[in-house]
Image (cartoon, rainbow, N blue to C red; front, side):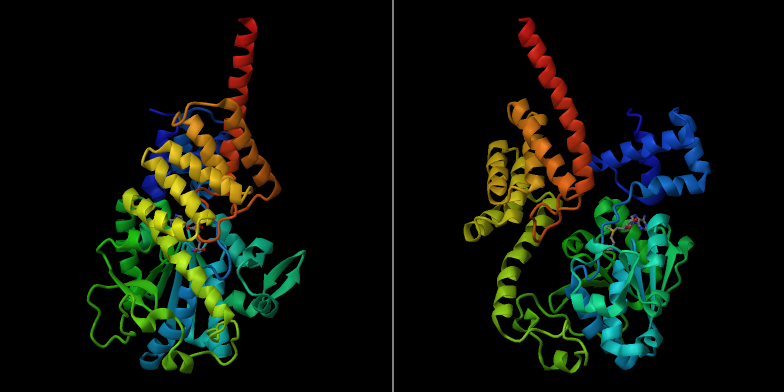
Length: 469
Ligand SMILES: C[S@@+](CC[C@H](N)C(=O)[O-])C[C@H]1O[C@@H](n2cnc3c(N)ncnc32)[C@H](O)[C@@H]1O
């Protein structure tokens, strides 16, 4: 059994995190830093300390969580929530309604909702809604409470919103006090929702970009826990690429205006909700019908639907590729490789130079054990976007994992490219537009550095052997 197996088991049991595959790199680092900070190298002693010392365990877990987040992430669902769903609920229900961001990281998600609610309802938003964020990781919660952010957090937020809600603060930006105080943050473990007691019941739970770190069995357990926190009429929103993976039979999946959400299987008949629109329904294209216009905020250029224009056409083109890409991504995550391959092939016929499609197609080909095809896709991605570090990384992996006959020099070049690219731009998305990089940039760089060192040893050994011969 590997030295790390008991640590994996402990983290899985307490927090649900599935530390297999590439996530192992984080575990290696976390155990090394634990050894350094405690002075203990013996695994049994370390585990005993970890299980009995809550603060040490929290510190350890902070190094294992992936806290990637930013303001205004996946805004379509948030716009629907704020401009359609919540006003409809308020038309028949007494305020306040409660919204919970489960796995809120450093606060960008609940604060985005706060800004959008403020845009729509003005100052009275604070009386209409309670906002809470919860996370396992105590370090990100401390950041959330401070509400001071650097450049990357604003990558999707309009300059207008940033200027309206933030003030310069020590070289960064601080959220205005009235919004900061509106959101409450609390320690929260999805596996132990009731004991964490974040309050509730909640009318809306945002559970976005969190479930990808759990296996299916754990996700099901989490749904049951979240069910305890959800008000009878409440809804659960997952991230765009996660929705299908969360359709586990605990909740019912509903689609409205292109946004997917979950609700209890049989809501009471008195519950108001907009009739779910069928996929492909013409009114579901987000172009804004008369009802949606009535509900538009008075003071929200950023939120208003775009007039039919070049912008709309451009959006339609972007949507035309981003939806199938997200579907292909889901299919890959669900191991439906043949379906993913068929979809990507069709997509690449229309958009032969889509970096996202090329990288996904390469990954799918690897799973289908077609390394030459995977090689071609990754090479094409690098040809279109030399900064595409995921393509460099996975090309090198084809050699390292023995899927292609090894070429140590090629392998070295590719890993070196990953290290160079991610040293220059540590949070680069590698030129991907729609899907997230298949592994976090920090992990890719860490692994590439390790594998680069290993390939140097191979090359040194080879040249010594050849020299001796
Ligand atoms: C990638 S962030 C997502 C942040 C935000 N929801 C978003 O969509 O941008 C995932 C967060 O889930 C948290 N998390 C992971 N396991 C958790 C658990 N068992 N309970 C609560 N939070 C957890 C992590 O600490 C991390 O901050």
